[in-house]
Length: 419
Ligand SMILES: *Cc1c(COP(=O)(O)O)cnc(C)c1O
Image (cartoon, rainbow, N blue to C red; front, side):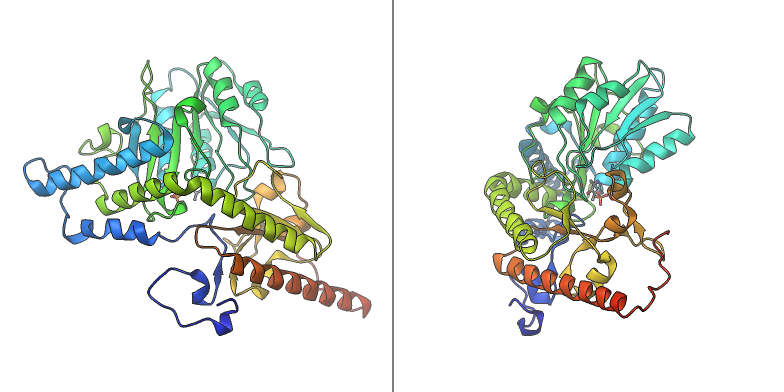
């Protein structure tokens, strides 16, 4: 079961990723749908297929009931009221609705927005677009651990500020942000506070009302729910938080997001939130244990390693390491039986070092030599032992190769380190 070569043939159940010959440790990119979630969704494809907007028959009523139950599960996980949950297609859409929706509704009050330089692209993209439309954006710079403080936020707010958006937990380096303090700094100045909580919901406790968050984005596929599902939480306050919708039409979701609801997806998102609520505490403890074992297992056998992100304030399943003297990309190629992500975005022909790792002060070499491990619900202790062994032997082999090349006086390949 450990080594892919001895792995049994794929079976229909249970979903052990290692049985597919590749151990899945990329839980920040996406997570598998929990079998319990899938089971809850299935009747809503072809049995209870009604449109929740159909008010005249039982098909519609049943679908609406299922949607409202799911809304309640999401609200329950976050400690908010069901009425404060708007269904979307995922965190990208929720972030766009929160940011453009605020800009559109609060134009009269100001044109300044505050965020950080290391937000997810689905937050940075809307801000870049708003800059083209004449808005001004302050991008706060993180510390070496990826931290952003409430004092930084407070210092950036001006009389023209209409929105602060800081993520709850980081998708690359796992750093967790001080939401309560940031929210307080915003509330004191009557500024609305949005958080992209795609990586945090279901992983760490988030009591939205006591944290003082006004708008919160979440997505189904990072918490063992289906892809293409998500929500934006909009707190009811007085005066009411106005948002301009992105999608106009039949007036679904209180006019904020028109379009027939994705009923099976929403049911799945609800089930995923219910499971997360029930199991989060124990699961976080288990993941932290496995993650610390992975860290210690690698650290005790290899030199010249560094941890990226905050040493304590980090997601339980996240480990981001830089391996001195090794290219992350060659490491990933050699570790084909382990699904991890490197600190580089391979969106272009040449991998670009991550803007996040650069922003927290890593030089290009360090940023290129990093791996992000994302442990999850189906990660086992056996898998972690196997990964430790494979990573250690692979890094040693690559380092030996590099020094052999050097000792033989073979000139290095023309480096592409300037890309
Ligand atoms: C994955 C992710 C998103 C995007 O979510 P989608 O549902 O895939 O659109 C946004 N922000 C963060 C921090 C994420 O990790």
